Length: 530
Image (cartoon, rainbow, N blue to C red; front, side, top):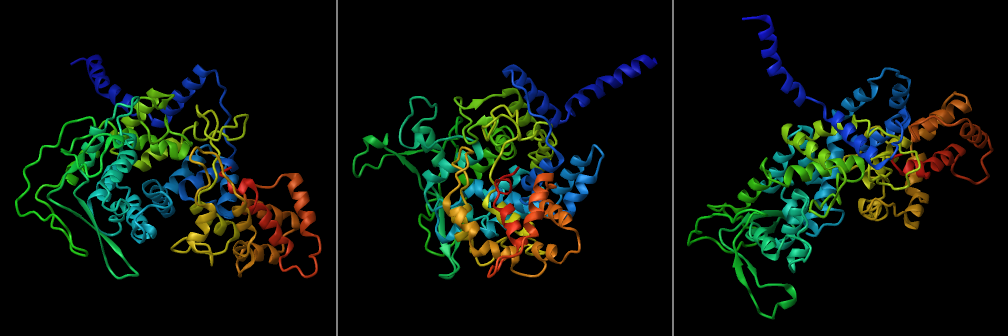
């Protein structure tokens, strides 16, 4: 056998593998740059180290870096320091906690129905956080959310509370990126999904039962499934007559075939008594729809999660809006969406892997400083600017003031109450990425709860600066590096030093240091991710 033949044979095996191993981050940059070139758009430059440091911490672990982390990162000079920081944060326990908070909001929103069954979702966040910490594949934890009935997972179905139509709308939107709410009432003239499609999907959920158990002060949900029951279709909502029941519709996979199922046993239970658990049916429609939704060859599932994770870090999905993968949705970079979806499948729905590739891309690491005023740049020519979520704001308050050495288990602000805080910070945007600040939010930042964190106990940043023997200039540097994750400019340093040297007004309970911390915490720079 000749040497030339051996080398040729080896190349046959090596070349395809090498092609498959092209990093997704490189594909992202190549496709985005090609799109920018086609649109004749000049992209923004690379973000500064301080801008990147704050952004990546907030995006991955939901809070700003510590003073020590900031100083250490800024003094490093090797070219791989950003990649190493990303790896470190992805392995930080806070990554799983933050992702659980992000996905909790995706799956429930701020104020889901279900009353006390879903108001406190700490059990669900714990359930999901444990799965993310283990890096379980996305398709696996979706199956567990929809099929298990313990450890908090039951709260997902509890929000629909025996309403199969609402379950159909939300599950299709969340896991398939498909909007079916219009088809709930009528056949839309510009959408391919009909009422029959909608009720065919609803047939998979019509037999689910949400029952309550537990004491009056600790109600819990139990999820069961009946062996009988059909969804009834009586035509368009505008044509319905009082007392009209309609005809039963067989379960039908969206865009696919009807479900083939055996006849239900004659002794099957129809109703569930309060607190009584239904036996598992001999044939489960829920099992079948979950199996179909999470299947690798499902035409919607992988694309929907790829688009959603992309939007989480880039501001807008490759298909926009993020919950609408219809033919009319805006897809500016179709090749990239296809490539990213294929990569998600090839890596078995590994969300952490996908996140690592995305945030290592030059596209993600662009600066947000430039001429673009759109908070969600359409072609990703500039980094997005976003307000911090309520959860991120709470964690960032704590980190900036050094209020606690260890975060509280419920991540709450002292004496504020979650519902009280969420009322002001729970919905910072209008759903389109535009910030909707309010006078109530501003007033909250002026009240005693924030002041408690600034000067309420020993060990805070205020006490640290007050007792330090550093120069005023060094104190101002530490103040900025701790609160804003960057050093001050020369002008800022001069102004803050002059202010800190002023005598405190008679009768004032706050020191100049307290006031300086409060000023930075009320700045737009602190409120946003840049």
